[in-house]
Amino acid sequence: MKRNDNDIPRVENIYQLDGRVPIGKAIPFGLQHVLAMFVANVTPVMLIAGVAVYNGRAFTEIDKALLIQAAMLIAGIGTLIQLFPIWRIGSRLPVVMGLSFTFLAAMQSLASRDYGLMVGAVIVGGCIEGLLGLSARYWRRFVSPIVSACVVTTIGFSLLGVGITSFAGGSGSPDMGSWQNLTVATITMIACLIFNHAAKGFWKQLYVLFGLVVGYIVAVVFTVTGIAPMVNFAAMKTTIAELGVISLPHVFAFTPKFELGAIVSVTLVFLVSAAETIGDTTAVCTGGLGRDITEREVSGSLCCDGFLSAISGGVFGCPPITSFSQNVGLVAMTKVVNRFTIMFGALTLVLAGLFPPIGAFFSTLPDCVLGGCTIIMFGAIVVSGVTMLSHCKMTQRNTLIVAASFCIGIGVTQVPGFFAHMPAIIPEIFQNNPVAGVFVVSMLMSLLLPREVHAEELDALTDETIGQEFADQD
Image (cartoon, rainbow, N blue to C red; front, side):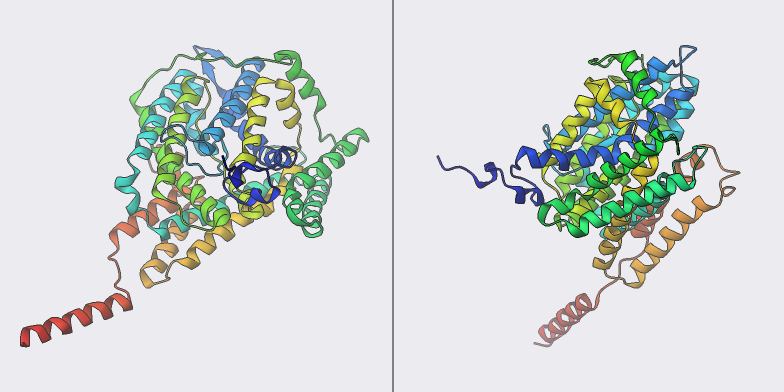
């Protein structure tokens, strides 16, 4: 029996969606994806656990540690299913999944009342998004290329602030913007750029991993010498002491409670998350694979987003998961799209969920080190969106859609008092989420503005009319 070329491990396959890559080469490329999203993946659940109450009892440190463990595990499982679909769930694209900041405000609001309300709303909202994915063939045509281009560009713009915040040391940090943080972040960024420029062949695509290693070493030196306490080894030891070396996650630990108002508000946020997922997966296709996304891929990605979020809440007690824009930027920059390679990143997340010391180590990565690597990646998403816009004909109609959606969707997030007299649910969705505003405005204008007749279509209609006149004369 002839062996398929894709079954032969080749380094060059890292630039192909399918095919085997030597494990020694695949692991570092997969590890890049984990390092790029690890802190952002566990941060939402840490913030939610900080205000959460369940049956009148506030969460303890052990409760928080267990949720962090579950967050890593469900992110790994979700990524594996995106890469290798089960039935119609999964896109078969190099998409990395993780806990979403999009839901943070809504989740904190419900968790502060009762964690069971949050779990119940996540189960229902996730199933609704999953069903939306299964029915994508009926509504996909209404999401025009100009809408997708606007959403992808806005995702990039919305992440620039996240990258710069990390670069400066992270929000809430007492030494944010200090010379120590800026120095480490700058060294990390320069290490990334130098390695990418100097390395040859596939090695140059490991620039993020190289920058993280250099930045982490510098941060450890700063910590040991007393220049600045950047790496928290004590927190790592505490996590291991609480959970041990091997620990299974607690499942079905929270009884879901269903309240109509909570379900409606969370479902609306799920619709916004669906728009982001469409934008992310579209950016992966255009930026990484050099082609348009298919209807099957849109459907699979949304099914994974929704149904895995329902499992995240109902089984593991975690917030919803979704595609990670940080990793979309990494794919766009490196062009490494191989599913076999990224699978090792997903397996690392699963192991981190089963072996607390692994997660504890990754959690010691300083924000400024991550910021030094991610600002370039986030800029790559903006470039992908601009490229998509350039492929759309900038007619008067499309120009109006782009101008209005950016102006309104992004503009309202810059004015704190804009939503002051509106129902609370509206600012929860739109105040800090420009992607939601841009998606809604661009979709409405795309549906309501009359479609323009292009010159070639007009010529065809004219020729048809003239031909009909001749036929009538005959």
